[in-house]
Image (tube, rainbow, N blue to C red; front, side, top):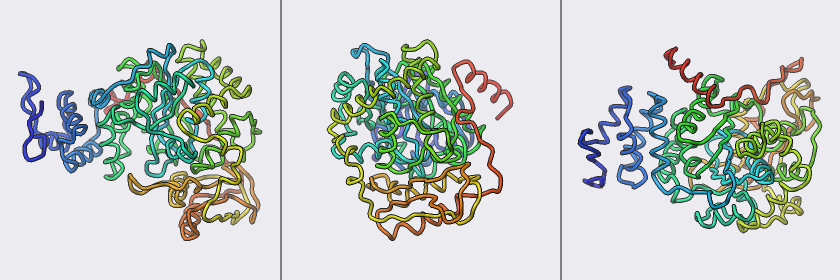
Length: 477
């Protein structure tokens, strides 16, 4: 057990072969660009979980790790230590393969709401542990809590009961699972240490691996709205997460997906739920730039991989077909509504959505010139959504379920000056001015139609991920 001195964890003798560990030495070591070994990282993680290491020392180490980076070995050791910092959930009694999906963070990204019931309808069990809004990106839990009564905080026994009943459950991180991540996640958001591949990988995978998954699909965003803005940084994160998950015994695949514009036509909490339910009700958007076709397509691709890793389809393409059938025959919608009911929510609000949606203030932004929408600074769009009231600046700050942006035109659309471009919903009228200005700076027009980027640009499985990491390390990057 660690010895306590002056309220801080000072030393711990781990084995006769390891010297006593001092927190300040670990901070200096990482600050100076040296790698930490597995016992040292476990010491840090255990101290974070127990509260034995002061927050200021954890914050200092996080900044050192952000500046100096974490090696592949450090990332794996940190991930496993965080996974093992609390209890681990076992889905074995449910009698089905457990699969999940995680996104590295985006604007308008509501695919979790779609893929969880889709994969469950195809015979998998989906124990999904999600997060809240972080920085400029939205959070699945904030969206679901827009449903009156929906409980995102369940005990592990309640979690298992919902899974047994519905096949899918979306909850927040429980106190029992990966408690070290709860501390480090909140610190990263407050100390500007979010955008680091090793820290992102460890945070995401520690929660997912603690849920006892058989398979994990990772949606790694790239583009102007991603946490990691360059393609190579996103590719490295994707390969790192796949390699780390596979080394821990969980089959994994990562897809690099487009975040050069919001996903779908809505960015906010309640309005993203409405858009998702419309698709679950079988809406088939036309393949035009102004529709949410990209949301439907990406959800089916991700669900197809989940169904494949869950042993319910021989290939991801066959999984896509099964998922689309579950979308069109209404079985995924039924599971989604059953999950809402099982977790205390009132699904009837989706039949009364016009009356339920009551934003404090509304403003339509019109196109200020004619032409094609060529580019969107999606990070700026995300901050606009956040400052309308849909996100938070402090960890414990409430969000407005009714705030957000609904887009009437998207990248690639040809618009005329004076036509509606987007409708903004805010908590109060005073919150509209800054988001309107952000949106006007974020959207750029051109005379010619822009090049259409790929929705999914690259896929990493175990072999391709390990080859990528070897080449990158061999190149000294």
